[in-house]
Image 1 (cartoon, rainbow, N blue to C red):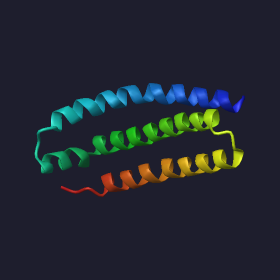
Image 2 (image 1 turned 90 degrees about the horizontal axis):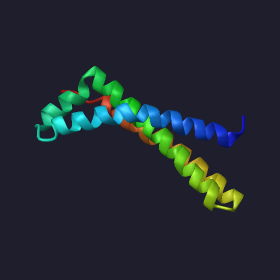
Image 3 (image 1 turned 30 degrees about the horizontal axis):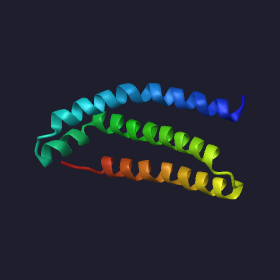
Length: 109
C-alpha cells in the first residue's frame, strides 16, 4: 500500500474515533464549566475520565500530526527541511500527549 494511502486511511479512522470522544468531552466540559476547582479535579481523577481524556489526547495529536505532515509534504520543497520538520512534529506529537497524560494520572483529590 502506498504511504499516502496509509496516511489517508489513518486520518479517516482517527476522525471517526475523535467524533464520539469530542462529543463526550464537550458535554463534560460544559457540565463542569462553573464547578469549583476541587470538583473539576475530582472529575479528571475518575478512572473513565482519565482513560477517555488520555485517549482523546492521543488520537487528537495523532490526527493533527498526520494533517500537519501532509501540509509539510505539499508546501515544503526542500527535503532536508521537510524531514527535519516532520521529525520535530512527530517528536512533539509524542512528548506533549505523554506529559499531559502523566499529569492527568498524577492528579489527586
